[in-house]
Amino acid sequence: MKKLDLRNTDFRVIVGPKLITEIKRKSKEKGGPYLLHKSTQATPTIYYRLLNGGGIHNKYFYQILDFLEIDKKDAEKEIIGLTYNGGKFVYTYLPQLDPLLFRIICHIIGDGSVASKHTCRWIQHKDNSHWLNELIKEKLGFSPTVSKAGSESCDAVTISAYFHRLLKYYLNISVKDIKNYESIKKFHKLPNEYKLQFLFAFIVDEGHIRYGNARSLIISQKEKGVIEEIAIILDSFDFDHSIIRKEVSKKGDIVYRLNIYAEGVEKMYKEIIESMKKYGKYAGLWQKQTLLEEYIHTLKRPKGF
Image (cartoon, rainbow, N blue to C red):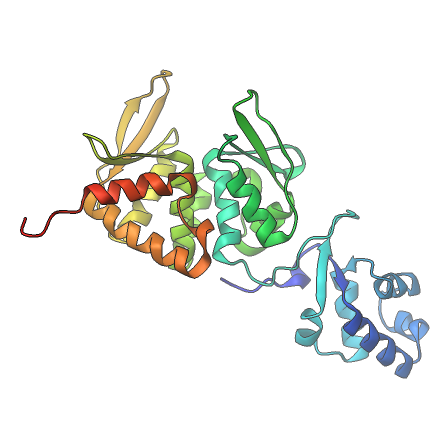
């Protein structure tokens, strides 16, 4: 996954005390904030805002670094937070989008919806909503807003508009288009660990695992294009699956589904275990992980058979 180029974003940068000290020292050597302003667009107000722990637009930040001859890579290591559009909330600076951060974005596609001002909501049963809540807190340091979603049994987890910008700057995808299969096509170019997290997230949201008399792992969706993209990802990992079938749901809606066959599930299970070893429990199937374990258990055969 490519590194975030702050200069091509609208983020405002907040830096830590080590860089502030260096900026003060270099500025004094160069003649102070007045000469800095004469050579850049960074006014004394902007300069002192940065020194006082406020956010300044990234273009001014890099102009200051250039004028003071401060190494950009070293300076970026001292960024402690980002804001945007004058917002008061400070977000974690994420120089790269790791698979679990990408996983948060992926849940918008399954059981998510795009709300006003580019915030998104993930709708889930109240017993299961804690998974995304905890993942966001672990990765970004804050808990999202959780509210009731139409009934007492479901929660709506708010996914910050920050992720709208991550989509835009990392993947060149608008959040309003994220559930469009044309956007999902861009995932095929990502490293395997990212594609797997998309697949696992989609199974959490749109998958059904059964292990009784009729074993099955079914993925279904109203948008045929989305299921077709899922099938391409399954093929890329050689996870054996059925053809896509068109059906009518109990509610009377047209849906498209495919079934991942037993051999495909076994291969996928191995990938899930490896992902969880590398990234932790949030890289698995969350509340459906136990169902998957039971499914895999039914596939085991006694010795000699």
